[in-house]
Amino acid sequence: MNLEKLIILAIILAILTLGESDPEIVVINQGGSQYNVTNLSDFNNNLNATFAQLRDELNAGKYFATAEQPRGSDSAYSMVQCRKYLSSADCIACFTAAESLIRKFSPANGARVVYLGCSLRYESSNFFDQSTQEGRFGSCGNQTASDATAFQTAVSGLLADLQVATPKINGFFAASKRAVGESSNEVYAIAQCVESISESGCRDCLQVAYGNINRCLTSTVGWAVDVGCFLRYSESPFFADNQTTDITPFLKTGGSSKKKAIIGGTVAGGISLLLTALFVWLILSRKRMITQKGNILDVTELQGPINYRYKDLVSATRKFSEENKLGEGGFGEIYKGALNNGKVVAVKKLSIGLSRRIISDFENEVKLISNVHHRNLVRLLGCCSKGPELLLVYEFMANSSLDKFLFGERRGTLNWKQRYDIILNTARGLAYLHEDFHVCIIHRDIKPSNILLDDDFQPKIADFGLARLLPDNQSHLSTKFAGTLGYTAPEYAIHGQLSEKVDTYSYGVVVLEIISGKKSTELKDTDDYLLKRAWKLYENDLHLELIDESLDPNKYTQEEAKKVVEIALMCTQASAASRPTMSEVVVLLRSKGSLENKPIITRPIFIDPETRVRGESSTSTTSSVSNATASITDVSGR
Image: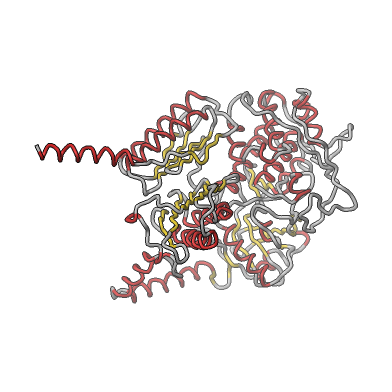
């Protein structure tokens, strides 16, 4: 009898323990794309398959998983992540709840649900390496800590340490706690990044998240979320003591304890001499690959930019002669050059003043830009910072820039398919810069002269990343103007507000130029600039009057032409938030048929392209304009 009582008591305790389990199904962020899939049946089949794969991974004990189904007309990509302090059962319960909620966003081509305990996201294109994205946020509790000053100090220090340690920890997860002042109270915090991004991507994301949560630090609870990470703290424990991570080894200069263990083991193992010899041999071999008897070689397989000698580039460009000059842009002149090994390159002389800080920034940015590899971005081969001017060396593009084919000597030679491919692939290049590279790069000066064409007339965007060299620049907000009016978004030209949507606006203007063959600054008989004329035609359902008359109407459909005009106008809407992301533009361009499920397109703001904005900094609602005020037309919806 006593044994039966003990068994019953054990069962009751187990049930009570299970009842106390909390999968933390509290929604802190949710949302869906404003664009719909083209084939809902195909997409749902693919999405269901990815969710089934994710569930299998979680059932196998994992806390992070990705799945993809690229079949059919609408691909599906999904990702789930649970906080590692949850039990496996709670992780699956959280996923089940997230899966149920996220389906409410159908037929959107992308959606996310973030709970305290887990997050689930799906898209119609691959997003697994995204770390940050515009629009994420932090949230604070409504109760202030009893000793706000001591609490803020403890939270700030703990979150700062988690920022440093978490990217170095395998699995990108850390849970830690810290005493609050001299009291017996403690604060608890976790940091977590998705496991499909890089260490630097995790670090960048947590930096953004910390900035978003920073205003909360006197509140007893707070959290911040971005596409690549999650940060949370509380005065109450939400993970067990045995789940605490020792982050101390990861805070020391020189890297993680794992790296130190490898170094220590190598030294103690008695094979360091062999490794040293091998290392020296590799270095010498690399030097021989880069230079042989003073000749510059093309070493594209090496990581990082090649450091060219100034005198070699002077010789390659024939002392920067006028006959070798290819053009001149906002950042300097560019010349054709032939290296000693016969390789033809393009050499840009940057018109940026030299200073110790500028040179340091230049070298850091070149390292970043040289690792940007995409078929629709011009490849940076190397640089030179050891001369009277800063020089960049790019791959040479035989067909020069797009503006020559739209407005120059080769005007009218591009057919509809070529133009459509240029429109689509330029969008792909921008989407990579904004969303797929581990650092978001905003171009700031998208225009036809910065879109180069290769031998097959495929576009490659040039000059990306150079605006980051401007003084006082920040990645997402700068009052330093760098752009070309007629292509520049009004919020940037007038207010100095910078985001990825600035490039989206410029892209929309360029699309109108590509399909019309007209410059954005070129007046028509009605005294309307291109964007204003395009809007008027759209309002009257006369899209096709915008299409270049030199194009053969038998080579494109009216439906396709109207769709391109509408996408361009979606990109130039007055509200930056209403403009699509560049990855969404790619989806829209690839979709078949018209934009049946498109949102209402709102009227652009029209700025007189002849106005010139100067480079002075301004935080007011107007910028210094050359003896004029930018002409702005009132915004109204269609």
